[in-house]
Image 1 (cartoon, helix red, strand yellow):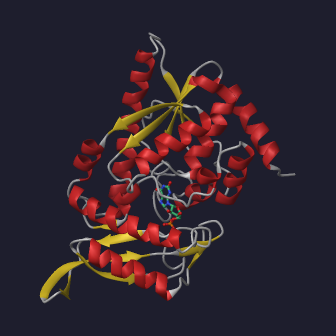
Image 2: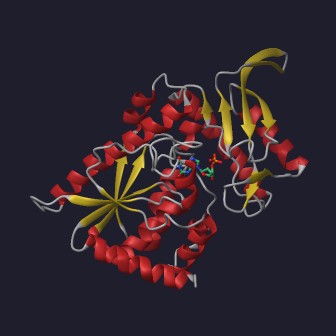
Image 3: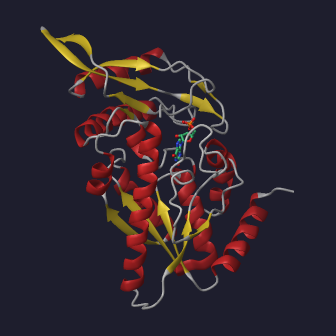
Length: 326
Ligand code: XMP
């Protein structure tokens, strides 16, 4: 029968066997899944694992610092941080199509991992060796929504499933591939990861890149980062973090509407609040948040974020909507 203890023991055993004496890297995204996958592999093969944190410029405010601090403090894992903002923004320039964005982001991740892998080997003075394995925190729902890794997305290509190049130089380790999010959280707990990591709300690997409807630019990302930080701050202050599954904030960068502020006309962008409740992200309902919390978020965003003059609430369940907009 399924116990978190047996899942941990069996995966650690399987990973040890698979990796042998070779090296592995794991991309950390700041989310629960990659953190738990990394912790499992670290338990199995210790210092043969190096985690790679890719700062792709699509992260939320304060997130990079948090990953570096929390996860390393909790696990003592070896971490390599790569600043890849320019690379990702250049690759995404002018691209509005959601699937194309997801594929580009997936591809750039792999490029960064390949470069990081050769640097790790060189830094270790391990000439002639290479990093054989790439650890990913792929979950069961990611596989299903991406079309089972067949290359054709049923719904959307999760960055770590549908976006992988054919000539991938790594063999994959995906210890969570048969689990749902709540099970992953239990495994994380069993591994002794702190609450802040285990209970963190989901955040997609492609980050804010798939929360800008329209092309991704640094300016738009900065706007969205501000709006998102305000929403998160107010939801936390209202004690709602555990009540909602997550609350994407989406910038409708290609839409403008007329507004008024002071005695002047504005012509800015709307942001969408997408608070949802869910058990496993396969289905979701929109969260009935208290009106006063919504009002506070709306007032603050429109006051504090230049260029955003309207806040709208997404009241669609999944299906027919998905949680993210892209
Ligand atoms: P959707 O939008 O498909 O999202 O209803 C379901 C859950 O998955 C997250 N999500 C992703 N997570 N890589 C990830 O690691 C991705 O490419 C990705 N796309 C969506 C989303 O935030 C939600 O929790």
